[in-house]
Image (cartoon, rainbow, N blue to C red):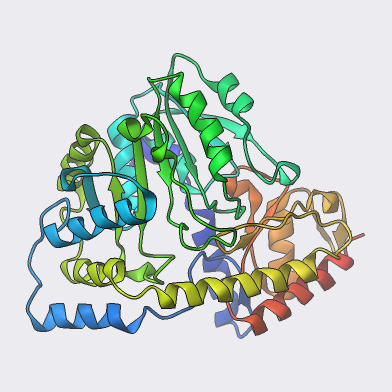
Length: 395
Protein backbone atom coordinates (compact mmCIF):
# COMPACT_ATOMS: atom_id res chain seq x y z
CA UNK A 1 0.00 0.00 0.00
CA UNK A 2 1.36 3.44 -0.96
CA UNK A 3 2.10 5.74 1.99
CA UNK A 4 -0.55 8.29 2.93
CA UNK A 5 1.82 11.22 2.43
CA UNK A 6 1.59 10.69 -1.32
CA UNK A 7 -2.08 11.63 -1.13
CA UNK A 8 -1.03 15.13 -0.05
CA UNK A 9 0.63 15.88 -3.36
CA UNK A 10 -0.15 15.65 -7.08
CA UNK A 11 1.97 15.15 -10.17
CA UNK A 12 3.44 18.34 -11.60
CA UNK A 13 0.93 19.65 -14.13
CA UNK A 14 3.67 21.00 -16.41
CA UNK A 15 5.18 17.53 -16.64
CA UNK A 16 1.75 15.93 -17.14
CA UNK A 17 0.89 18.23 -20.05
CA UNK A 18 4.27 17.64 -21.65
CA UNK A 19 3.56 13.89 -21.50
CA UNK A 20 0.26 14.35 -23.33
CA UNK A 21 1.97 16.47 -25.98
CA UNK A 22 4.65 13.84 -26.54
CA UNK A 23 1.99 11.13 -26.91
CA UNK A 24 0.21 13.09 -29.65
CA UNK A 25 3.51 13.82 -31.36
CA UNK A 26 4.27 10.08 -31.36
CA UNK A 27 1.00 9.63 -33.27
CA UNK A 28 2.33 11.92 -35.98
CA UNK A 29 0.49 15.09 -34.97
CA UNK A 30 2.16 18.47 -35.55
CA UNK A 31 2.37 19.37 -31.87
CA UNK A 32 3.82 22.66 -30.61
CA UNK A 33 4.64 22.65 -26.92
CA UNK A 34 4.36 25.82 -24.87
CA UNK A 35 4.33 23.85 -21.64
CA UNK A 36 7.89 23.46 -20.39
CA UNK A 37 9.90 26.18 -18.67
CA UNK A 38 13.09 25.18 -20.41
CA UNK A 39 15.29 27.44 -22.55
CA UNK A 40 15.68 26.06 -26.06
CA UNK A 41 19.31 27.20 -26.23
CA UNK A 42 22.38 25.02 -25.83
CA UNK A 43 24.61 25.31 -22.80
CA UNK A 44 27.43 27.80 -23.63
CA UNK A 45 30.63 26.22 -24.91
CA UNK A 46 32.91 27.42 -22.11
CA UNK A 47 30.67 25.72 -19.56
CA UNK A 48 30.58 22.47 -21.52
CA UNK A 49 34.38 22.58 -21.84
CA UNK A 50 34.74 22.84 -18.07
CA UNK A 51 32.72 19.64 -17.73
CA UNK A 52 34.82 17.89 -20.36
CA UNK A 53 37.97 18.97 -18.54
CA UNK A 54 36.53 17.65 -15.26
CA UNK A 55 35.94 14.24 -16.85
CA UNK A 56 39.40 14.15 -18.42
CA UNK A 57 40.93 15.10 -15.08
CA UNK A 58 38.99 12.31 -13.36
CA UNK A 59 36.94 14.63 -11.19
CA UNK A 60 34.37 11.86 -10.82
CA UNK A 61 34.25 10.99 -7.12
CA UNK A 62 31.86 11.87 -4.32
CA UNK A 63 31.76 15.53 -3.40
CA UNK A 64 31.05 17.22 -0.05
CA UNK A 65 27.31 17.26 0.68
CA UNK A 66 27.02 21.07 0.58
CA UNK A 67 29.18 21.52 -2.52
CA UNK A 68 32.84 21.64 -3.47
CA UNK A 69 34.77 24.56 -1.91
CA UNK A 70 35.61 26.18 -5.25
CA UNK A 71 31.95 26.33 -6.28
CA UNK A 72 30.85 27.66 -2.90
CA UNK A 73 33.48 30.39 -3.25
CA UNK A 74 32.12 31.26 -6.71
CA UNK A 75 28.56 31.40 -5.33
CA UNK A 76 29.66 33.55 -2.40
CA UNK A 77 31.29 36.00 -4.83
CA UNK A 78 28.22 35.97 -7.10
CA UNK A 79 25.88 36.83 -4.22
CA UNK A 80 28.12 39.75 -3.23
CA UNK A 81 28.77 41.00 -6.77
CA UNK A 82 25.28 40.73 -8.22
CA UNK A 83 22.94 40.87 -5.22
CA UNK A 84 24.81 42.81 -2.56
CA UNK A 85 24.40 39.88 -0.16
CA UNK A 86 27.19 38.83 2.21
CA UNK A 87 27.19 35.10 2.82
CA UNK A 88 30.01 32.98 4.19
CA UNK A 89 30.67 29.67 2.47
CA UNK A 90 29.16 27.80 5.44
CA UNK A 91 25.88 29.55 4.61
CA UNK A 92 25.82 28.10 1.09
CA UNK A 93 24.44 24.70 0.08
CA UNK A 94 24.60 23.34 -3.47
CA UNK A 95 21.83 20.93 -4.43
CA UNK A 96 20.56 18.86 -7.34
CA UNK A 97 18.57 21.70 -8.90
CA UNK A 98 16.77 24.67 -7.33
CA UNK A 99 13.71 22.45 -6.73
CA UNK A 100 15.88 20.31 -4.44
CA UNK A 101 17.08 23.52 -2.75
CA UNK A 102 13.53 24.73 -2.08
CA UNK A 103 12.34 21.34 -0.84
CA UNK A 104 15.30 21.17 1.55
CA UNK A 105 14.42 24.60 2.92
CA UNK A 106 10.71 23.85 3.32
CA UNK A 107 11.36 20.56 5.14
CA UNK A 108 13.96 22.26 7.33
CA UNK A 109 11.60 25.06 8.40
CA UNK A 110 7.98 23.88 8.36
CA UNK A 111 6.44 21.87 11.18
CA UNK A 112 2.96 20.31 10.98
CA UNK A 113 0.37 23.06 11.33
CA UNK A 114 2.74 25.93 10.50
CA UNK A 115 1.22 28.47 8.14
CA UNK A 116 3.06 29.29 4.94
CA UNK A 117 2.00 32.37 2.99
CA UNK A 118 2.17 31.90 -0.78
CA UNK A 119 1.09 34.55 -3.29
CA UNK A 120 -0.76 33.04 -6.19
CA UNK A 121 -0.20 32.35 -8.98
CA UNK A 122 2.79 30.36 -7.74
CA UNK A 123 5.19 27.86 -9.23
CA UNK A 124 3.44 24.49 -9.35
CA UNK A 125 5.53 22.77 -6.67
CA UNK A 126 5.26 25.30 -3.83
CA UNK A 127 1.88 24.18 -2.50
CA UNK A 128 2.70 20.48 -2.74
CA UNK A 129 6.00 21.02 -0.95
CA UNK A 130 4.15 22.68 1.93
CA UNK A 131 1.58 19.87 1.93
CA UNK A 132 4.33 17.26 2.10
CA UNK A 133 5.80 19.05 5.13
CA UNK A 134 2.30 19.04 6.68
CA UNK A 135 2.20 22.81 6.72
CA UNK A 136 -0.89 24.91 5.97
CA UNK A 137 -0.73 27.00 2.79
CA UNK A 138 -2.27 30.47 3.09
CA UNK A 139 -2.80 32.01 -0.33
CA UNK A 140 -2.74 35.67 -1.33
CA UNK A 141 -4.67 36.17 -4.55
CA UNK A 142 -3.57 38.43 -7.37
CA UNK A 143 -4.82 38.85 -10.93
CA UNK A 144 -3.94 40.40 -14.25
CA UNK A 145 -5.20 43.81 -13.08
CA UNK A 146 -2.63 43.92 -10.27
CA UNK A 147 0.09 42.56 -12.58
CA UNK A 148 0.02 39.50 -10.29
CA UNK A 149 1.64 41.38 -7.40
CA UNK A 150 0.55 41.37 -3.78
CA UNK A 151 0.29 44.55 -1.72
CA UNK A 152 1.81 45.19 1.71
CA UNK A 153 -1.73 45.43 3.11
CA UNK A 154 -2.56 41.94 1.78
CA UNK A 155 0.59 40.55 3.37
CA UNK A 156 -0.05 42.23 6.70
CA UNK A 157 -3.63 40.93 6.84
CA UNK A 158 -2.53 37.33 6.23
CA UNK A 159 0.05 37.16 9.02
CA UNK A 160 -0.92 35.32 12.20
CA UNK A 161 1.03 33.95 15.17
CA UNK A 162 1.13 30.62 13.29
CA UNK A 163 2.82 32.11 10.22
CA UNK A 164 6.24 30.48 9.84
CA UNK A 165 7.21 31.13 6.24
CA UNK A 166 6.59 33.28 3.19
CA UNK A 167 7.67 31.88 -0.18
CA UNK A 168 7.62 33.59 -3.56
CA UNK A 169 9.50 34.07 -6.82
CA UNK A 170 10.58 37.21 -8.64
CA UNK A 171 10.82 37.14 -11.62
CA UNK A 172 7.77 34.97 -11.28
CA UNK A 173 6.77 31.67 -12.80
CA UNK A 174 4.05 31.58 -14.20
CA UNK A 175 3.21 35.27 -14.61
CA UNK A 176 6.54 36.86 -15.56
CA UNK A 177 5.91 39.47 -12.85
CA UNK A 178 8.97 41.24 -11.39
CA UNK A 179 8.89 43.14 -8.10
CA UNK A 180 10.69 46.49 -8.22
CA UNK A 181 13.08 47.71 -5.54
CA UNK A 182 10.37 49.91 -4.06
CA UNK A 183 7.77 47.12 -4.05
CA UNK A 184 10.13 44.68 -2.34
CA UNK A 185 11.11 47.33 0.20
CA UNK A 186 7.43 47.85 1.08
CA UNK A 187 7.02 44.11 1.69
CA UNK A 188 10.28 44.01 3.64
CA UNK A 189 8.97 46.73 5.96
CA UNK A 190 6.08 44.41 6.87
CA UNK A 191 8.43 41.51 7.58
CA UNK A 192 10.60 43.70 9.79
CA UNK A 193 7.56 44.07 12.08
CA UNK A 194 7.12 40.27 12.30
CA UNK A 195 10.47 38.71 13.22
CA UNK A 196 9.02 35.20 13.59
CA UNK A 197 8.56 34.81 9.82
CA UNK A 198 11.14 33.26 7.50
CA UNK A 199 11.29 33.88 3.75
CA UNK A 200 12.15 31.68 0.79
CA UNK A 201 13.00 33.92 -2.16
CA UNK A 202 13.16 31.94 -5.40
CA UNK A 203 15.35 33.93 -7.80
CA UNK A 204 15.99 31.32 -10.49
CA UNK A 205 14.87 33.74 -13.27
CA UNK A 206 17.12 36.53 -12.00
CA UNK A 207 18.88 37.15 -15.30
CA UNK A 208 15.76 36.91 -17.48
CA UNK A 209 14.60 40.36 -16.46
CA UNK A 210 13.57 42.91 -19.09
CA UNK A 211 13.22 45.97 -16.84
CA UNK A 212 16.63 46.48 -15.28
CA UNK A 213 18.53 45.27 -12.24
CA UNK A 214 17.30 42.32 -10.25
CA UNK A 215 16.61 42.92 -6.56
CA UNK A 216 16.77 40.42 -3.69
CA UNK A 217 14.53 40.84 -0.66
CA UNK A 218 17.37 39.73 1.64
CA UNK A 219 19.13 43.06 1.02
CA UNK A 220 16.65 44.96 3.21
CA UNK A 221 17.15 45.60 6.90
CA UNK A 222 17.77 42.45 8.90
CA UNK A 223 16.01 40.09 6.48
CA UNK A 224 19.22 38.35 5.42
CA UNK A 225 19.13 36.72 8.87
CA UNK A 226 15.89 34.87 8.04
CA UNK A 227 15.81 34.63 4.25
CA UNK A 228 16.74 31.62 2.16
CA UNK A 229 17.84 33.03 -1.19
CA UNK A 230 17.42 30.33 -3.84
CA UNK A 231 19.04 30.34 -7.26
CA UNK A 232 20.44 27.96 -9.83
CA UNK A 233 21.84 27.59 -13.33
CA UNK A 234 18.94 26.07 -15.27
CA UNK A 235 17.38 29.22 -16.69
CA UNK A 236 20.12 31.84 -16.99
CA UNK A 237 22.72 29.45 -18.40
CA UNK A 238 20.42 26.99 -20.18
CA UNK A 239 21.59 24.16 -17.93
CA UNK A 240 18.31 22.47 -17.04
CA UNK A 241 19.68 18.94 -17.36
CA UNK A 242 22.82 19.68 -15.34
CA UNK A 243 20.75 19.98 -12.13
CA UNK A 244 22.56 22.65 -10.13
CA UNK A 245 20.73 24.76 -7.57
CA UNK A 246 22.00 26.58 -4.52
CA UNK A 247 21.00 28.64 -1.51
CA UNK A 248 22.41 31.36 0.66
CA UNK A 249 20.84 31.16 4.12
CA UNK A 250 21.35 31.76 7.83
CA UNK A 251 23.91 29.29 9.11
CA UNK A 252 21.48 27.16 11.11
CA UNK A 253 19.14 26.77 8.11
CA UNK A 254 22.05 26.00 5.79
CA UNK A 255 23.23 23.31 8.18
CA UNK A 256 19.71 21.88 8.41
CA UNK A 257 19.50 21.70 4.61
CA UNK A 258 22.91 20.03 4.45
CA UNK A 259 21.87 17.51 7.12
CA UNK A 260 18.67 16.69 5.25
CA UNK A 261 20.47 16.44 1.92
CA UNK A 262 23.02 14.04 3.43
CA UNK A 263 20.20 11.51 3.77
CA UNK A 264 18.60 12.15 0.36
CA UNK A 265 20.99 12.97 -2.48
CA UNK A 266 24.35 13.60 -0.78
CA UNK A 267 26.66 15.82 -2.85
CA UNK A 268 25.54 17.10 -6.24
CA UNK A 269 27.06 15.72 -9.45
CA UNK A 270 30.82 16.38 -9.41
CA UNK A 271 31.16 17.18 -13.11
CA UNK A 272 28.18 19.55 -13.10
CA UNK A 273 29.71 21.41 -10.15
CA UNK A 274 32.88 22.06 -12.14
CA UNK A 275 30.75 23.33 -15.01
CA UNK A 276 28.87 25.57 -12.57
CA UNK A 277 32.10 27.30 -11.57
CA UNK A 278 32.69 28.19 -15.22
CA UNK A 279 29.13 29.49 -15.50
CA UNK A 280 29.33 31.74 -12.44
CA UNK A 281 32.81 33.10 -13.13
CA UNK A 282 32.82 33.19 -16.95
CA UNK A 283 31.54 35.28 -19.82
CA UNK A 284 27.88 36.31 -19.43
CA UNK A 285 27.44 37.27 -23.08
CA UNK A 286 25.51 34.06 -23.96
CA UNK A 287 23.08 34.76 -21.10
CA UNK A 288 22.48 38.33 -22.26
CA UNK A 289 22.03 37.16 -25.85
CA UNK A 290 19.45 34.62 -24.72
CA UNK A 291 17.64 37.28 -22.70
CA UNK A 292 17.38 39.51 -25.78
CA UNK A 293 15.91 36.60 -27.73
CA UNK A 294 13.32 36.03 -25.01
CA UNK A 295 12.43 39.72 -25.02
CA UNK A 296 11.84 39.61 -28.77
CA UNK A 297 9.69 36.51 -28.39
CA UNK A 298 7.67 38.05 -25.58
CA UNK A 299 6.85 41.05 -27.74
CA UNK A 300 5.97 38.84 -30.70
CA UNK A 301 3.53 36.73 -28.66
CA UNK A 302 2.05 39.71 -26.86
CA UNK A 303 1.36 41.56 -30.10
CA UNK A 304 -0.69 38.64 -31.42
CA UNK A 305 -2.52 37.76 -28.21
CA UNK A 306 -3.45 41.29 -27.14
CA UNK A 307 -5.83 41.64 -30.08
CA UNK A 308 -7.74 38.43 -29.38
CA UNK A 309 -11.24 39.25 -28.24
CA UNK A 310 -11.88 37.85 -24.76
CA UNK A 311 -8.24 37.43 -23.76
CA UNK A 312 -6.95 39.71 -21.03
CA UNK A 313 -3.22 39.97 -20.45
CA UNK A 314 -0.55 42.24 -19.07
CA UNK A 315 3.01 42.77 -20.28
CA UNK A 316 5.31 40.51 -18.22
CA UNK A 317 8.64 41.98 -17.13
CA UNK A 318 10.69 38.79 -16.89
CA UNK A 319 11.01 35.01 -17.13
CA UNK A 320 9.61 33.53 -20.38
CA UNK A 321 5.90 33.14 -19.81
CA UNK A 322 2.61 34.83 -20.60
CA UNK A 323 -0.27 34.25 -18.19
CA UNK A 324 -3.44 35.64 -19.77
CA UNK A 325 -6.85 35.61 -18.14
CA UNK A 326 -9.07 33.42 -20.33
CA UNK A 327 -12.13 33.22 -18.08
CA UNK A 328 -14.32 34.95 -20.68
CA UNK A 329 -14.33 31.66 -22.62
CA UNK A 330 -15.83 29.69 -19.74
CA UNK A 331 -19.25 28.33 -20.66
CA UNK A 332 -18.50 28.34 -24.39
CA UNK A 333 -18.32 25.29 -26.64
CA UNK A 334 -17.13 23.99 -29.98
CA UNK A 335 -17.54 20.61 -31.60
CA UNK A 336 -18.82 18.98 -28.43
CA UNK A 337 -16.10 20.39 -26.19
CA UNK A 338 -17.37 22.75 -23.48
CA UNK A 339 -14.94 24.98 -21.58
CA UNK A 340 -15.79 25.33 -17.89
CA UNK A 341 -12.33 25.97 -16.47
CA UNK A 342 -8.68 26.43 -17.40
CA UNK A 343 -8.03 22.70 -17.66
CA UNK A 344 -10.89 22.33 -20.14
CA UNK A 345 -9.45 25.11 -22.28
CA UNK A 346 -6.01 23.59 -22.04
CA UNK A 347 -7.31 20.26 -23.33
CA UNK A 348 -9.39 22.00 -26.01
CA UNK A 349 -6.29 23.73 -27.42
CA UNK A 350 -4.34 20.47 -27.28
CA UNK A 351 -6.97 18.43 -29.12
CA UNK A 352 -8.24 21.13 -31.46
CA UNK A 353 -4.97 22.70 -32.68
CA UNK A 354 -2.21 20.57 -31.06
CA UNK A 355 -0.79 23.35 -28.89
CA UNK A 356 0.36 22.29 -25.42
CA UNK A 357 -0.22 24.84 -22.65
CA UNK A 358 -0.62 24.54 -18.87
CA UNK A 359 -3.84 25.26 -16.97
CA UNK A 360 -3.73 28.17 -14.60
CA UNK A 361 -5.26 25.97 -11.91
CA UNK A 362 -1.86 24.26 -11.60
CA UNK A 363 -0.48 27.61 -10.44
CA UNK A 364 -3.39 28.53 -8.19
CA UNK A 365 -5.37 30.71 -10.62
CA UNK A 366 -8.04 28.86 -12.58
CA UNK A 367 -8.87 31.92 -14.70
CA UNK A 368 -5.60 31.76 -16.62
CA UNK A 369 -3.39 29.70 -18.92
CA UNK A 370 0.39 29.67 -18.97
CA UNK A 371 2.18 29.95 -22.30
CA UNK A 372 5.93 29.39 -22.31
CA UNK A 373 7.70 31.23 -25.13
CA UNK A 374 10.90 29.23 -24.71
CA UNK A 375 10.74 27.95 -28.27
CA UNK A 376 11.54 29.27 -31.74
CA UNK A 377 9.89 32.36 -33.22
CA UNK A 378 8.55 30.19 -36.04
CA UNK A 379 6.87 27.85 -33.56
CA UNK A 380 5.53 30.78 -31.56
CA UNK A 381 3.90 32.46 -34.55
CA UNK A 382 2.28 29.18 -35.58
CA UNK A 383 1.15 28.44 -32.02
CA UNK A 384 -0.28 31.91 -31.36
CA UNK A 385 -2.21 31.87 -34.62
CA UNK A 386 -3.54 28.39 -33.91
CA UNK A 387 -4.67 29.53 -30.47
CA UNK A 388 -6.34 32.59 -32.00
CA UNK A 389 -8.17 30.40 -34.51
CA UNK A 390 -9.28 27.85 -31.89
CA UNK A 391 -10.60 30.50 -29.53
CA UNK A 392 -12.60 32.14 -32.33
CA UNK A 393 -14.55 28.89 -32.75
CA UNK A 394 -15.81 28.90 -29.17
CA UNK A 395 -19.41 30.16 -29.03
